[in-house]
Image (cartoon, rainbow, N blue to C red):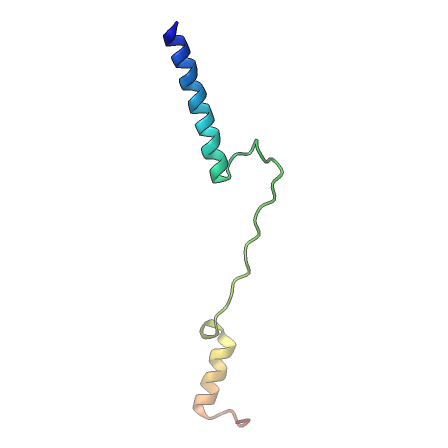
Length: 68
């Protein structure tokens, strides 16, 4: 009899832990079936990655820019 109760308690603990881990990771589909997906932030282009900025600097260094 004790063996059956211990087995049932073990199964219950495993199921509750499994659901808790799934909720903590945000992968539990049953808890929130209509949860919105997070939006990705727009990619920020640094000035040293911008081709227009680099060509402007290059023109200034070569002396082609007459505006000052």
